[in-house]
Every structure is written in C-alpha cells, then in structure tokens.
Amino acid sequence: METVILAVVIAVVVLGAIGGLVIGTRRKKPLPPPPPTAPDITTPPAEPHVGDEAETPRDEPRRTIEEVDLPDGSAPVTVEEPPSLEVPEIEVPEPTAGRLVRLRARLSRSQNALGKGLLTLLSREHLDEETWEEIEDTLLAADVGVAPTQELVDSLRERVKVLGTRTPAELRTLLREELVKLVGTDLDRTVRTEPESSKPGIVMVVGVNGTGKTTTTGKLARVLVADGRSVVLGAADTFRAAAADQLQTWGERVGAYTVRGPEGGDPASVAFDAVKEGKEMGTDVVLIDTAGRLHTKTGLMDELGKVKRVVEKHAPLDEVLLVLDATTGQNGLVQARVFAEVVDITGIVLTKLDGTAKGGIVVAVQRELGVPVKLVGLGEGADDLAPFEPEAFVDALIGE
Image (cartoon, rainbow, N blue to C red):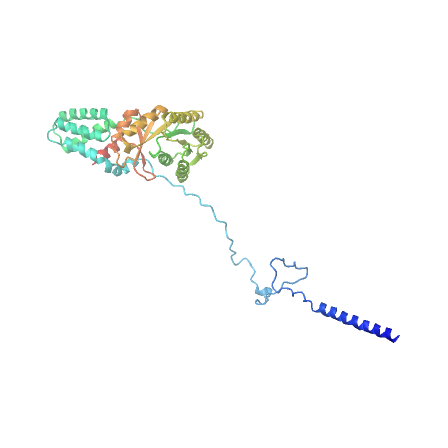
C-alpha cells in the first residue's frame, strides 16, 4: 500500500515539473511590438466622431472669438481673377492715298541710274548715231523691251530735232513726258473690288512661289482695310502649310477672317468656302491666295482652272492679279505668259521694285500681257505695297 502511495506521489511530482516547464516556455515567448508612435501613411486616420473636439496644436495657443479677424466689409477681400486670353491688337494700316509718293525715295535709290544715264546722254553737244545707240542700250538694260525702246528713241529724236536748244530743264521735261507716255496714263489701274450686283468682290491672286505672292495677298488686305473695306482671306495654297499660317497672321493683324483647309487639301474647296463665308458675313472683298507650283504647265492649268470655275459658281471673279518678282526682269515675262494662258489676268503686282529691279520691266510686262500694273511692292514693311501711279513712278526714275 505504501508502495502504491509512493508511486502516486512521484507521478504527481513528475507531472508538476513537466507542467512548470511548459508554462515557463510559454511565458518566454516575445510579446507583440507596441503600436507605432508615427501615423502609418498606408492606413487612413480614423474619422472623428460626433462630440470629438479637434486637438489644439501645442505650439499655438487658443484664441478667443474676439481675437480672430473676421471680414466685416471694411477690409478689401482680394479675389484672384482667372488669366485673360490675349487678343491680338488690330492695327490701323497707313492710308494708301499718296503712298507711292511717300515711298519714292526708296524707289529712286535703285532707279536713278536709268534717268541720270539718259539725261547725261541727251545733254551731249552732238547727238550722233553712236549716242542714240547708247541711249537704246541704256533702255534695253533697264528691261524696257525692244519695241518700247524703239518707240521711245524715235520720239525723242524727233522732238530733240524740233527743239533745237537743249537746256537741262528742257531735256528733263522732254524725257519725263515721253516716259510717262510710254508707261501709260490712260489705263484703269484701280483694283476692282466693288461688283455691280452684290457683295463681296472676289479677287484671285496668282503667281509663282517665291515672288512674294502670299505676303502680297496679306499686304493687299491691309490696303483694302485702309480704304475702309472688310476682308475675308481664302488660304487656297494648301500645298504649303506655312502659306496658310502666314496668311492667317496677316489677316489677324487687320481683323480679317481667314478660311483655310487641311494641308494638301483641295484648293478649290477652300476658295469655294471662302466666298461662301464672305457672302454670309456680308464682307466687302474676298481675297483668294492660290498655289504657285510650276512643276508642270498642265498641272498648273488644271488646278487654277478648277479654282476659277468653282469660285464662279458663286459669282464672277472681279479681279485676277498676277504677282511678279521685278528682280527677275525679262525672265518674269515667261512666267507671265504661262499664267495668262491659264486665267484671264486683269492686273499685275510688281514686288521687290526697290531692290536691284530695273524699272523698265513695268513697261515690258504691260506690253506683253496688255494689262496694267496696278500695285508695286517697295520694301519689306507691312505698308510698302502701293497703288501704281505712272507720274510718281517716272519722277522716281529720272530723279529731281
């Protein structure tokens, strides 16, 4: 019996020891880490409940309602306004009346050689055949052309023979009269922009790229605006992206609306839309800038012919202006012939006449096409396009 009791006691002691070891092992297991002191950016903060008060910052003392400045209407409250879009300022172009006279000095700088050369030759004591040949050479070198040169020399010889004595003043008057007659004062040089039936007047501008065609169209818009006309521009030169951008910039400067199409689009479609827009807006004039590619004569004829036919579905063209670079001289006449075969040219615009151009080209191109020079470009300025005035032009040729 004692043996059994002893065995039970030993068993209880052993079980107790084992239990103590297990409990000791469990108590030594590491505790979970304390909650972080800084807020966890991944866990959104708990929403405040009703009745919770906002914690007052420790570095800022509480302020009473009397200490807080509230707007009472006496202090101005500044409110930032949204930035306004910049609207381009509309320019007021220089009046066109007498513009060529004001630009005469610019023209005479490059043309005086012709006038002075002729006056020097005519002032010789003996006007023999050799002198008259020199006079012919001077006129031909100025791009006057063969037939006009012969006419001028024949007339001068006859008048000098009748005149007898030749003072400098008499010679200048004589030369001036003959040159004015050669340039022509009986031609209608007005740019026709007022149709008899209804507005708008339709003007198509043609010419080879590089002659200043698009720039001239923009400057012509300024001329018309200066004369009190409203203008719509048609950017029908769709093969040069820069041409439409350039024309639109010119238009924005004087408040003219520009109609344009996608790059490489149909020029006739743009021209049609421009005339349609001009009619709907009640505009005075629609200016259409066309492409000037001379890759093939046939392609040019087809393209310009199509533009002309499409535009005339709205109304007949009032003016077709050919832009020529005066510095190309007689070579420009070749271009003029090509365009004259495509469309009926009604007027000529001579650009770059202030540079190395020879003034005789005015006479030559008029004779070649049978149409008058209506406008001349005398510089790079926005208002350097002037209505052509024969007498002011001749005065610039022969100087004071």
